Amino acid sequence: MSIFTKIINREIPAEIIFENDVLIVIRDINPKAKVHLLIIPKKEIYTINDLGQEDTKLIAEMFFTAQKVAKNMGVSEWYKLNFNVWEKWGQEVMHIHMHLLSDI
Image 1 (cartoon, helix red, strand yellow):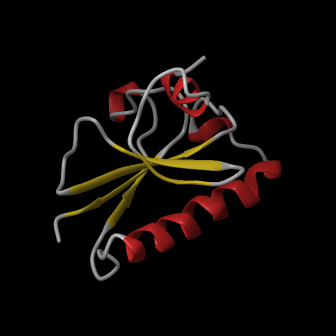
Image 2 (cartoon, rainbow, N blue to C red):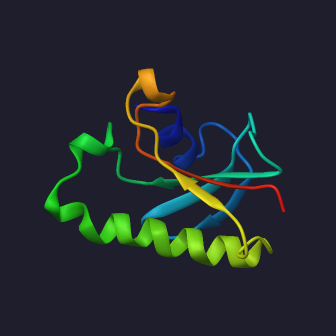
């Protein structure tokens, strides 16, 4: 079970920005920008390489949620979205998640 699943299950505290049936958005505890959020599916998927066709709507929901959250946070004019894949490329938690970063 990943640390994100523990956050989703409320076993570990986190600052929750948004939540629905399939996703949770939290503040990164080690921010790399003024706004650094993590958009995390509630379904535990190890890496991007483990996505299946059945996850198409989930991934779309992640991007639409990023758009909505960026607007709500007042950073919709400039933000970056990022996925890291595998530890070598910065994936610290083996549960897919998308970073939303902005310095506005």
